[in-house]
Length: 275
Image 1 (spheres, helix red, strand yellow):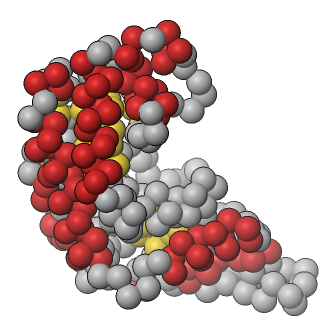
Image 2: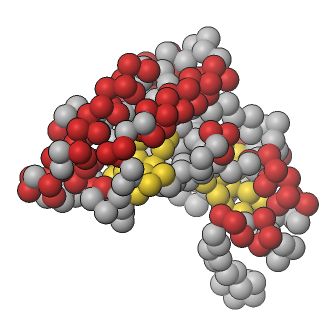
C-alpha cells in the first residue's frame, strides 16, 4: 500500500519473548498453552508488558479454554481467538470464537463482509453496513448442526467452577507422571513439557524416536493420544470426563506397548493424512 509503513514478522523462542517486546513492536501474537509442549504463558504479565511498550496482544486460547480459568477482561487482553472442539467438547468441526475488548470495538474492521455481519441482515439494502463491534465478525451463517452440538457440550459447564477443573487437570497429569516414573520400561520417553504443573496446560508431551508408532498402538488399544512431528507423543487430560482410573489404565497400556515393543508392528508405522 502506497505510503504504508513496512511491517516485519519476527518469530522468537519462548525464552526470548519478553526481551523482544520493545517499542518497535506493534502486535504480540502468542498461544497461551503451547500446542506441542504444553508450556503455559503468563497472560497477565505478558499483556501488561506489551501495553507498557505500546503494543497490542492477540492470544490463542485453543488449548486453554475449558481447562483453565481465564479472566481476559481483568487481564486487559486486546484480542483472542480459540476453538470449541478441544476442552469445550464440541467435536470436530465445532465453531471457533473470537474475542475483542470493548475498548477496541469502534476501531476494529472485518475485511470479510457477509450477510450475518450486516447491521440489519433482513433489511436487504443495496449498501453493506457492517454491524457494530464484534458482531461484524459473523461474516456468514453459522453451521447450525455444529452449533447445536457445542451448545449441548457447553451445558455441562453450567455451575462448574473452572478452578476445580484446573485442580483436577493437575491431579490427573501429576498422577500420570508419578506412575510413568515408576515404570523403568518407560525411561525412554523423555518429558518435553515443563516439570512444574503451574507452568503447563492440561497436557503432557514426551519425545521418543517412535512416538508416532507408539501413538498408533495406543489408539488401537483404546487410549486416544496425539502425535506431533517430529517425535512428540502428547497426552491430553480433559478434566470433565477423564478419570484417575483412566490414567492408571493408560500408563499400564503404554508400559506394555513399550516393553513388549508392540509398536514395531508394521501396521502402526503407516502414516495417514491425520496423525
